Image (tube, rainbow, N blue to C red):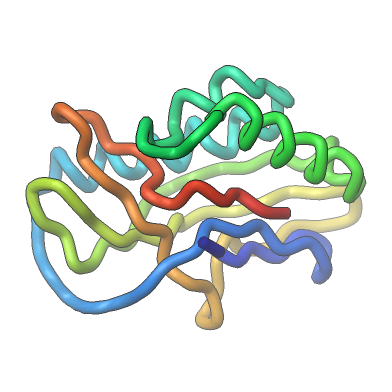
Length: 141
């Protein structure tokens, strides 16, 4: 799973995904945008618990997944970055699944970049009891 994000032209943030078209309502899109906002906030805060809460319950050991992802993030020297999720592009949305990519800016020492670009892949989401979660179990930096 990899949603690619450029930070200082080097760091790639991953959430893996596939493609297609579709539609959904604004409430679902807003909920998915909020997942992205919380996702990036979890990395800013190095909050493993917050990140684990976004991971699909079908994944084994979401706490371990979150811990590994945040450790990787910190090891890559990204701790000072800040993220501003201003929107989301959603495709292939249904009542229980969607694909999306965040819109916004990542700020880092010396500059800023878009959260995603034309080469970025869409993240997959699942709707679990009315709550959108990351569908894939791998969060890589």
